[in-house]
Image (cartoon, rainbow, N blue to C red; front, side, top):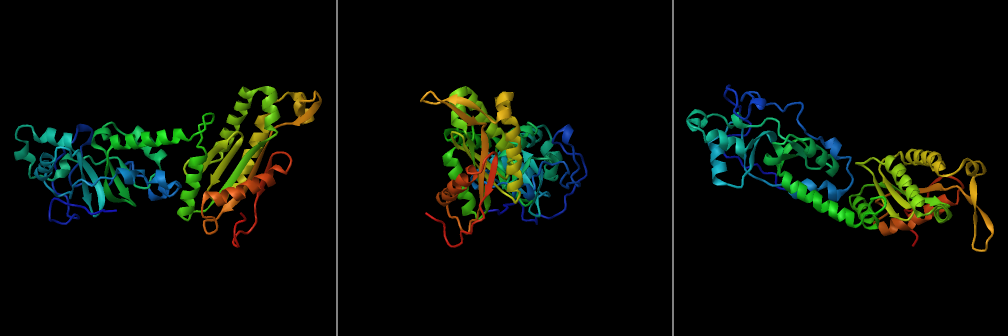
Length: 380
């Protein structure tokens, strides 16, 4: 990625800002030209936060939006910056950068509006451009997850809708982005996600599940795959009806979603009563047990006290005979997907089917974690 900073002055970017008069940006954002440290309340998202994101495609959203308009050093004059806006009618804003770090942003509207008034060129043309700088622009790290980007933009000051935002990588300026382009990209992603999402739970379906697993493995990032399946669901669905069955499916999706970190983890709905969790971190067992305990409590609300006491209910089979059906339980089979062993989602699916079968062989709400060593190869 090209991070070259094209300054409009030959002077070094680390020169000191001169001048001591109040800026002209707006009454609510007055600042002195010799006081330009990054304010503590600036919306800068740290690299540590961005490292939590696991999906390479979503994490690269700002890379797609990155543009490289001219930047200026803090000592550049207002006249020089005004000239840049005059020469480029599509230029919405210019970043002010020193030592590779963004100090602020000069919006086209604010600069042109102020400098077009009588005597402004004579009074301020030779003054530092920082008089017209917004010292609190919206700043986003290039690896920031899409969910965090959306939240910051929605809650940002309306002025950023026009001027856009600065993009950094580990605190260093790399370019700019526009809110319009961001909304367009998010809309495109939402349409793609809706195409493959489950209509009942709105969770990603098979295609995005497979893509997510492949992305992690390609980036050499390990994870735990947890295959979740309901036991004794079909007879319940037949007796109580599909609408009640749908409520149980949605309950399951909510419980499983709640044990997932919305940034680090991934949950998908394969179909029917089958779900898959892609968990990052070492607390897979703890979180799965938490889901099982909650499911064991909340599923009982769908059964009578009598059914709960005897552990199930009776239904009539096709031969007219009464059969006992157990209360619905949840089984979770898990294993560690080591990228040194697993190369794609097809290999992952083979072991996922195995651990699911092992978990379902255990009575009640059950958890099974595979301890097998696949360094010698994955069975076909």
